Image 1 (cartoon, rainbow, N blue to C red):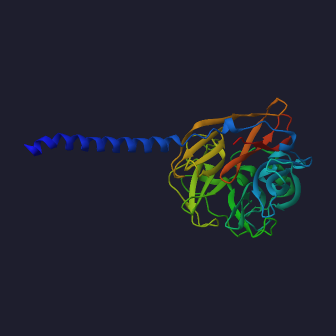
Image 2: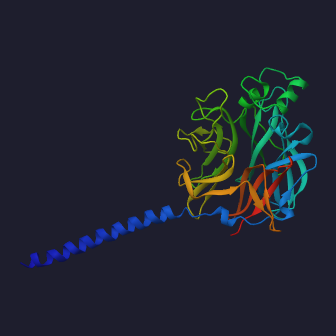
Image 3: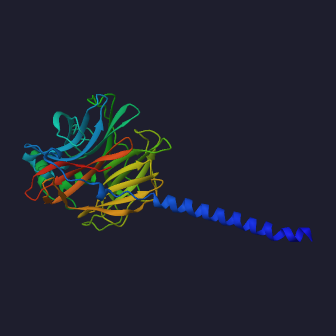
Length: 365
């Protein structure tokens, strides 16, 4: 009889433990999901004139900010000679370096870092879509380049490739299909930069044809995540669907191992910018979707979904004078973080008058 009297108490106590455990697991799951609360749109502040970086002789485009050991901010940014036209990014792009006391500018150009190496190299033409990072005391400059294979282009053919749109079989399409990602490494932010005989990898499934638009971040586990853009396979000859894929490596120089699951598929997007948010314990991927900027998120860097605040911006920005500037293209976004906090969003702006500038948007903390 004594045991039978105690049994209900034991039963209720056990039920209470199960209920508490269930609530704990639910709270953990809910909190993990709720960490996706970064609102980049709300953080974006109006821009002043010092946040705009323009060049009279070059088209200024995408950029990366790195804080140097000298305490100054170093900007690596893509340029194309205006005399060859904006679309010479595929043939004549260079990466230059500028310096500032602030990550939002104003910037002063100090160096042209590198361009295409010429005949006989895989990176024969152009250096473009660059991203620069400091990992463990060394500097890594990732870039896209291309070549004409065994065909030596005449000046007339090169001019055709600069100015024409791609079509199956034409010269620009050949250079487009030969796009690859490479890396250069330096011990000093001012160089010299060591380049390599081959790109870091060849296109392989899930992407096809070529590789471009590289972004790299160090993972909490100590290895490295790369996200790149390529073509979606099995498309019509005159159709391109751009997609994104992920690669992993133990070293910033590779070897890089392609991951089987796409980051983005069946949806045109490019210019990924990936960073790890240690506070939220998740990755974010900012990209442009040919009309607006969108943002994805992931807890492991391999399985991605739209972020809670997915749509970041249309093709416009606001100045400190209250003016809304509508633009033709708003691309090559980047996020500069300091002490784990995003401070600046960078972008390449193509104005409706045909000129360009690099843009630096302060981010509210």
